[in-house]
Length: 274
Image 1 (cartoon, rainbow, N blue to C red):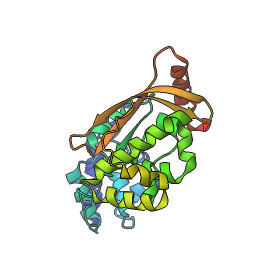
Image 2 (cartoon, one colour; image 1 turned 60 degrees about the vertical axis):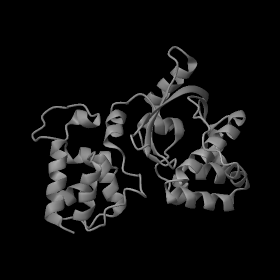
Image 3 (cartoon, rainbow, N blue to C red; image 1 turned 30 degrees about the vertical axis):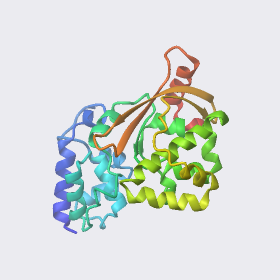
């Protein structure tokens, strides 16, 4: 681990960011260029003390998980992320087998969506980052580990996961999840491994997998069931990266409807409603 180079790289990348680059208000009395350390720490989901010690060459060697979080917080490109990992003494993650580095372009859009539920997901159904309204609508989907990071895995192994959808909509959504995983398995070994694991755990998944569907259309009009507010009818828009490895999912409601009022309430009250 090269502490001096790591500290210098973090500081320079932090100073290169402006508040509006990450959806923050400009604020007043900024004595130095760029973001404050506490702002980067918040964006990265860690304590200010931990991040500060890294910049001051005093911290322990960060784990790969912490480095991935810092890369998201600083909106690093893939080349910059790889450099960060190497400075910390880790091998840079494979770009073929991993898609958990959030696209900076998608992050820039997400940073500007303060009142609308939105989240970035991988092609394996892993939620990589959510804004506050999305957490209020769907719960925190970023804290899962192992296979449970995939929405498809949770759907077929955790009955509570299906409560998000009304009963009439669950069969089709299950087909969509399986078809998406089937399509991903053609190019990503992790998708094939996940499918084998699920086939051993769930008879429902195994039957759908045998159907070999790869093109169940995404439903752009969804009804979700919130535990406090009940059913909410939403329009779902997708923004994909060029390589189709990640997507930004944005939920909106028709203006003037009860559904729009429910979304407004979620934005005001937040996850406390859960």
